[in-house]
Image 1 (tube, one colour):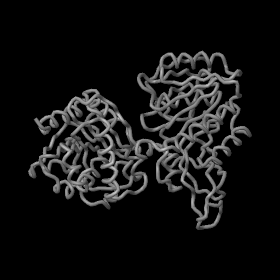
Image 2 (image 1 turned 90 degrees about the vertical axis):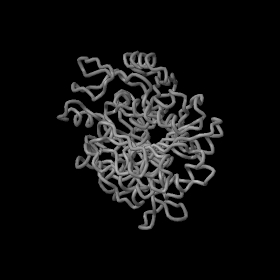
Image 3 (image 1 turned 45 degrees about the vertical axis):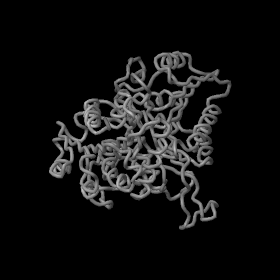
Image 4 (image 1 turned 120 degrees about the vertical axis):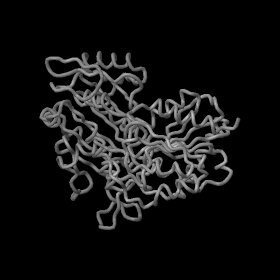
Length: 468
């Protein structure tokens, strides 16, 4: 499983303070976010009516919002906004800006990293509620809170934040210690002004300016837009609170609509150069880092690619049959859309573990399309639900059985098994004697982060397997 250092940073630190709907809400580990205001939708009985009985259950969340207050702190306006969001079926974590700044200033690390706590709290809440589908958190704030939201985006990995809105952001963040980000930084008398990281943003960003916008902050926001064309900038006659409410309502409504096939997919379009498409199942950390980099490499080489976010897809337990049925839907839909005959299946870590069984359950006609199965950082056992132990780099329960038992049922010349030489428990070396292509690469679980070389290994092997 992929190690998940974000969770390590938050364990054992802090506890949640308040809840809109649950008076006896258990404590959460909240890291450096001091006493957040946590609001959850009211539990419901079997008839769908609000209830506090022991049998009542939390409804499926429509979204997960982190709302950062302005410089004056969490007050009546933020309280009202949070309750409106909860009424729409989303959960809210309210962050009091002044106390958060004090907490961050006391951090003794070399730099300050906020996203680990955001992601950890989001996962704790959604796991405890029992949400079937994981919702990436949305960041929202106005004034000083808006500036902090933009700074959070400057240090966020891919596939971690669902979106962000900053209304009337001020120019900088009032902290002398730097945030952990490669983005441009400019110290001022009151803190640091941050740019955003080069390239595509890790999540959609909207910056809105009302007639009351701070002019220095507005100038900085427009400069960010000039450097990053994918930022949406809005001028509005609404006040900050009204615009924030309207934007969040629209964002949550959009999130409720299902994406491609109702599955958490990232679709990388390309003009097919080899009559072949790729399907990549990510590790349990979601569609980021290795998964997205390998997918981007394949796309650049003329291979259209569909990425499956395993964190979101396996957030609640799936069955092997269900997983295989959804894989078939992806194959059928996108081979038709792109007009290709062949498919390469790729899995990383958690995604590699589930892929052999999913392939084995495909209909024969669908199997004939699959020309290669590339398994990277394979584990000895299979799980069908993302777990905390997986994020911490520990083995899961292995309820799905042994990966090798699924692999030996596949024609051996179809399988490519790639492993890091530093990994002690990877089954790949043992499969070489069974005729499986076993590929050692220097490094550990992340293959020393040479993802283009990893993608090239996959393509080079595929070329030997494609019809001539």
